[in-house]
Length: 133
Image (cartoon, helix red, strand yellow):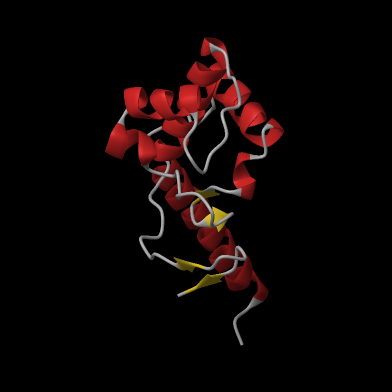
C-alpha cells in the first residue's frame, strides 16, 4: 500500500489534470448560438395550433398522411412552401393563413432544416391511415 502522503499527492495530481484537460477541451469548442428566433418560435406555435403534426412528420415523427417536412426548406425553398400554405392541396386543406403566419411557418421549417436530416425511408400508406414498410 502507498503511504497516506503519496495518496493525497496522486489524487491532487489527478484532479488538477482533469480540470486542466476539461478547461482545454471546453475552451477549444466554438460557440454555436442555437437559440430559436422569435419568428421561428411563432411558427412552432402555429405548427402546434394547426396540428400539422397529425399529418406531417419532423425527423420521422408524426403523422404519415403527409410528407416529412424536416428538410423541405433546403430541398424546395420558401416559394414552394409558401404556395402550398396559401392554397392547400387536394389532400391538405387550406387553413386561410395570413402572410405573417406563412412567414412564421417557413421560418420554423427553416430552423428545423438547419438541425439535421430526416430518415429517408418511405412507407406504404393504407386507406385507413396505417402504414407498412
